[in-house]
Image 1 (tube, rainbow, N blue to C red):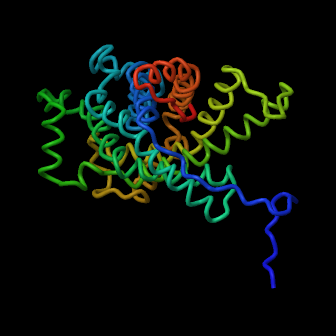
Image 2: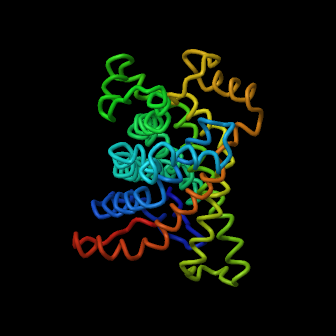
Length: 319
């Protein structure tokens, strides 16, 4: 008895398309690291510092946070935590995301997920890996740098960056430098999942408005708009970011519970500042999401060309 021939899309004898894992190339990693470093060194870190300052000092509005940062060190106050922590994070998180997202997307497809579903699964899994591999201790040390100014206000010279790091390491070990890492993981997973989905929804809307519903290439400004809407709207999870800052903050408060967990931090913030406190810093975070989009999309083609000339390798990563 002969085995029936498998049919694909109504074509007898056609074989299913072979599932291939996307290669992770050095040129892709270099492109991601270069764009991330440019983004954080320009407007990225000032927006991050403003966001973190507002989340740590929830009685401050935007103007109050900017005044506080300026009093801390003028223009350089907006770049606290940039070297080495933000640079380490920027140069490594793209590599972690590409490696892990590529694997997760491939295995999701082997279990029958479509392109959209496997893309979300890949992004969320990559975001989770980012949090535990590099972003946990980097965000912790950046927050420590930004919020430790109260030591200087008391007349004591604050310790340097590496001295602070070693002090936390000696006192609390790996748990100390990764304080708040679970909150970072929740933020990254929800951020990547919602950013991917919302950007796709925004792109569909733009295609309908512009009459490009049949796969025509979007212009640079259309791509920026779709990604910026996705990035901006994914700030709905700002409460977990405020919780993360509270867990990592060096701001002194005798009323704050010891050994904060995500749940304890959420209760403490809500009791003291209400629902508004959980969304403190959302405006600079939306600005940060839009700036990241502009860097990745608008500058992506220029950076892609430069990386291909440098490495002689074709860049295949989307930006």
